[in-house]
Image 1 (tube, chains in turn green, purple, cyan, yellow):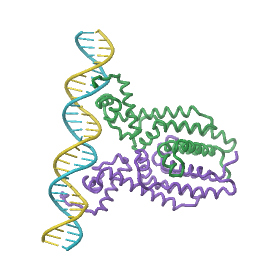
Image 2 (cartoon, chains in turn green, red, yellow, cyan; image 1 turned 90 degrees about the vertical axis):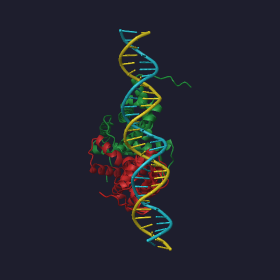
Image 3 (tube, protein in one colour; image 1 turned 180 degrees about the vertical axis):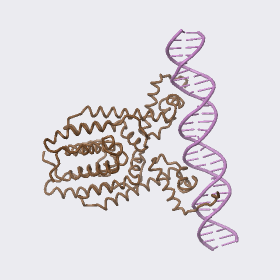
Length: 208
Length: 208
DNA sequence: CAGGCTGTTGACAAGATTGTTAGTAAGTCC
DNA sequence: GGACTTACTAACAATCTTGTCAACAGCCTG
């Protein structure tokens, strides 16, 4: 039972392992739910080691939040780049963004941070670029008719964002309360519906 | 400086005052952020008094969450009843629901509870009834064409729910990141856009 | 191998937080 | 007025959480 062997990593590896453990807690319980002892135990170190590498609990939380936001940013950019321009594949693009947000609990992280009102330094989601790209595509579909204002496209992107961020967290309960099933396929069908709604906005509006 | 006067309420009044104080913390910091001392100080009692009336911290949290959910339920039903059936006034109805969710921090409470995975006993939002009412209205607008499936209407209600719950929390950041303004009028315009999108789904789909 | 650098840890300290207990005081009923 | 109920509180206890400190232990360089 000799646990006397000390594992010695270099500083970078130790920080990574500790941040990995902290990120689990971040997804599960939010920034305010991160406990040094739990993070340390999960990382296989003692809690003073965590303080040695990060200085304080707050600094650890800042670091894990910043790393998570950068990871989210990278995942979203990747998902958006992969299926850019093919408006027929909008459903696939929404699925890719949804997977980026739901898979690793990233949607939960975004909501935790928004609720706790944490001041974030970097890694904002480049929604403005998405709006611009979408707006250019939309204008091309309108032909010679007068194009919709940019604000309209921005609203469309915001609506999709709200849906995709909220879906992993609120989706199960909302779908069940609406009388629908609650499995993964039900969420996929909702995303297909969202794609249909968005595409319909691309066409020129009906004359009233 | 004689603070020696003990204020003595009856049990119901004491519980109400304590729950009011606890609800402030619930909105601000979530169920996990409720502290007996803070709640007690805010309610003007000592913390053992809180335990006297509720038994334990967990019981207090359960009580305040249940009361908040019932209040949300009542506010939503009221908002939905007030503007029922007038599809031309859909924007007003969305505004009413938005006010019910944003005004008292109710949207924050719903998100806190969803994120913390708290098991809730009663007070589910009656989305199924909303879906049924919306679906009936939608079918009447379709005339003799074949009506859309009920699932489609349910998806529409879920989309509106995701937007209205997420808007008070994520709206400011999303609107700003999209290159829009961040004031109250910007949120109102987004809701008007949402109403437009929903109403467009009411019309029969264009032939493809 | 000697020495230093540094990752690592047990022990401790200080404060926060929940819960207990004994007793006080305000209101009610006889 | 006296007895009873109960809202209420101060003081304490137990546990948790963050942070400090001195010392230990790998690893590299001379």
